[in-house]
Length: 326
Image (cartoon, rainbow, N blue to C red; front, side):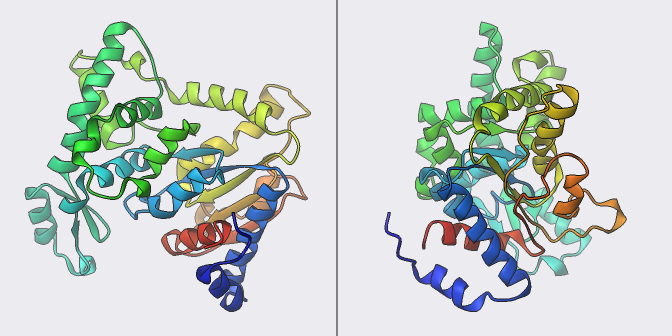
């Protein structure tokens, strides 16, 4: 790739000189340096970033090899695919702050589930995906096979079954980019998602065994195997979008290996950045500043640490644009 900077990068470097803007610039340069020096990067995705269409920049980051592993919520895992197959049916509600309880009820009656200013269409998104994913779940169950949530999603994407529904340029789907690269993903708390709820309903109805879906504990055991194999040299960096379980779960693998597995030579995370508007008051884990993570055995004193206290839907695409030299 060319080393020349594109117009977005030039704009950031010229204008983003102070406060959160400068933190954004520093974090982007730190991410870039980490990769240049041979480091790997985990990106963790909380909130509704897939519905915010982060895939437009995230998919390119995956294709360009700027991300080595992802941790995301079950919602982000499925909502990127829903956007891929049902984009034209989404409904935007710019005046969402003015909605009355009756307005909200009317959206529900029309099978629209609202995420801030964006309504996800139940029939075209959830049910369309459910119809196809059920067969893959059931086939695995019948064969006595077990897979992780993201592996089932990869299977359905790579089968080509969903291509008939594509409503966006597939290059803007980060899950498709991840499936094509077989990118490692961990999805803690997957059951807290629409597809997780749907899977649970089949378990309750005795149609599928709960054990057909590998669990969060198995994700942690898998990550405990992956981390030592990938943390040599410059080590693994941690780029956290938002807070919550997507970040809290994987970052714990280091203290777990050190304290509970007694692997005293395990390296700390070697870069850390969090983009979040959560604050540290009220005991918020999501807003905990990087230094607090030193006391938990997650970060070293010398780990490059960045925090951008701002809206991830604005900040992250800009950081990715810098790394991609756009």
